[in-house]
Amino acid sequence: MIPINPALANPLTQQPLAPPNTTSSHDPSTRPVFSIVVPIWNEEQVIPELYKRVVEIMNSTNQSWELICVNDGSRDRSMSLLCDLNSKDPRVKIIDFSKNFGHQVAISAGADFAEGDAVIVMDADLQDPPDVVLRMIEKWREGYEVVYAVRSKRQGETWFKLFTAKVFYRLLRGVANIDIPVDAGDFRLMDRRVVLAMRQLREKHRFMRGLSSWVGFKQIGVEYERAERYAGETKYPLRKMIRLAMNAITSFSYLPLQLATYVGFTLAFLSLLGIILAVVLRLSGSDAFHGQATTLVSVLFLGGIQLIFLGIIGEYLGRIYDEVKGRPLYIVSQAYGFVGHKESPPTP
Ligand code: UDP
Ligand code: MG
Image 1: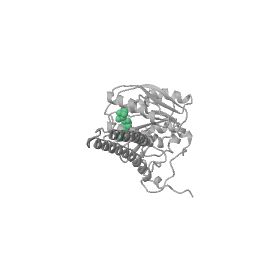
Image 2: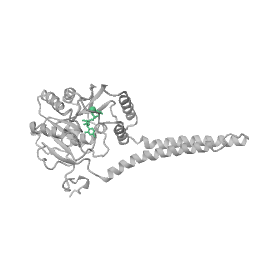
Image 3: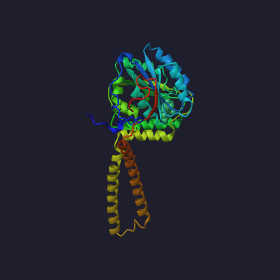
Image 4: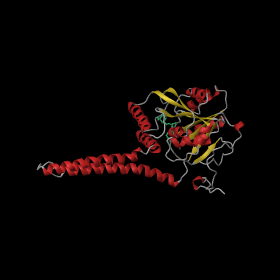
């Protein structure tokens, strides 16, 4: 008998569940060709327009599709708007989280439930123009398995966000041990094979664009101009952007940990020179290095550096702790529109 991982217990019933679904349980003939996954957190102002545009674009493909909206603990009318759409159009499916689990987790849940041959992830706010999807689909038909959208220009963003994003993507590329494309967000199309591979990656602090690079497959970018948010405000204040950046770096690089060694060696070497210099000056009768100020400053300086590296170790340690706890990635309160799992959604 295969031992059951307690991490895979159904949070609602406490019954053990099967491991994440890495093969389709459904008849391929009933599966849609495209799944659009949209994370939604307090987006009441954009949902009607989002639906309208998705229908327009996806109908023009003449293929079957589903729109999976992941309600990430919205506190506004988003959920009731989604329920309205679901009752009028069964292609709109809803995963309703029990609370806010964050953007990256919401995307993961959408990909876990998606049934399409290709899964397209986009923001609710129409910053990722749905018509770029058609260009992505073209590339997918040519045989590419991941088609990511590269922002050649971004409208309606502050200079601060533009600058920090630019620095971040280049820094990440410099330190990461995989090839993560610069200026590409989560807006992308993934072939079913890629999605099945990504379902096996259950790490808690997720950086989805990194994970979708990590799994490999044939990848290509399409350029687009990122539009302004259609309505509402960004859900990524500076604090969350820093968290995401830290998750990205700690997920794909050990460099911050190794820095302690490099800085340690450099400082030890410099202090050795300092010791030699002090001895020589003392022997030659000079009274340089007088007083406590130099001692105090160097002790404080070293103390600061040690605390910084303790903090860096803490960042990794906290993430290891979260992995060890083995909590599920998310908890679904209700799932609507999914054949066979209306009451009990598949395992997170
Ligand atoms: N989002 C979410 N949970 C969160 C934060 C954001 O589901 O905790 C959704 C949000 O509704 C939107 C997408 O993630 O559809 C991206 O957020 P946003 O557009 O505010 O980010 P930005 O484009 O400003 O970086
Ligand atoms: Mg946005």
